[in-house]
Image (tube, rainbow, N blue to C red):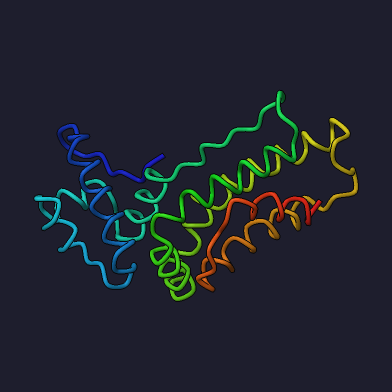
Length: 186
């Protein structure tokens, strides 16, 4: 759910999406700290007031733009083995990062400098994806495919941590990476 402030007449959804796309592009190109609401407004061909009618601050706009353009699209399934679903999840995460790994490196740095941004990113981006992984792992445990003693939280941290570390180190992902990661962890 977007953090949009709704006062006055209805908001133009086309403009909202334009602002989100512009913000996402700028954040990925320049990093959070370098982007201003003035620049977003200018490139969106709108006013800062129009942006502030929708978002209370730049942090809210960044999180909503990330969520809009990379929502957690993997949903747990009962017709596919848990290991394959975990591999699919990792491959999906890679597909989100690969078009612009530099942007994600900027984002990680910005998250370390800004506690409020970090908290919002965690709530809107990390937690929903961790919930998906939890459901997949629990499905695997309940079906007998995965061992019942698995530490779910640690397994999720290992998956996400490995992805973020490779992004920070500028290490490329190959087709075998997701398979190797899940096989090693399980």
